[in-house]
Length: 132
Image (cartoon, rainbow, N blue to C red; front, side, top):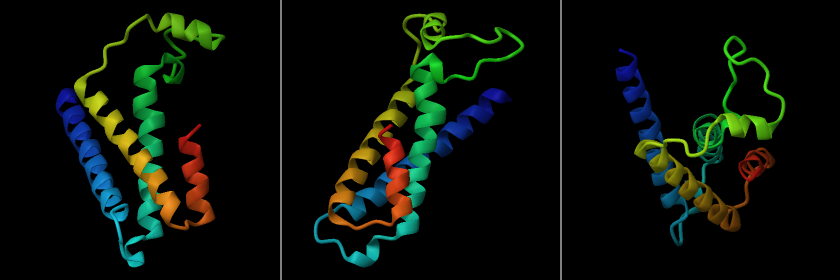
């Protein structure tokens, strides 16, 4: 039952990434009308990408980002110690790698969009957190 739930959730996340990519490709195409640049859509894409990077992708690549259970291992002091506990190579499935490449492309397209379109301060602030 949990496996089915995870499959459905992963499929929804993947579809959302596809939708964000589609919207970004439309907005960054040449000679696009200014009415296509909807601040709310851009902001939602930035928030979605930031959420996926921080809560899905980074934890799968770096154990420092994983939440440590207080009941099992307790507090682990330094980042170096957390990385060592995570083991060397961590298994990453194809879905995670695909999501990472989609988020990478979204960030790249957002940087292209930033060059051609003025954005609100809030959107620029959210965009700046992607690079950190």
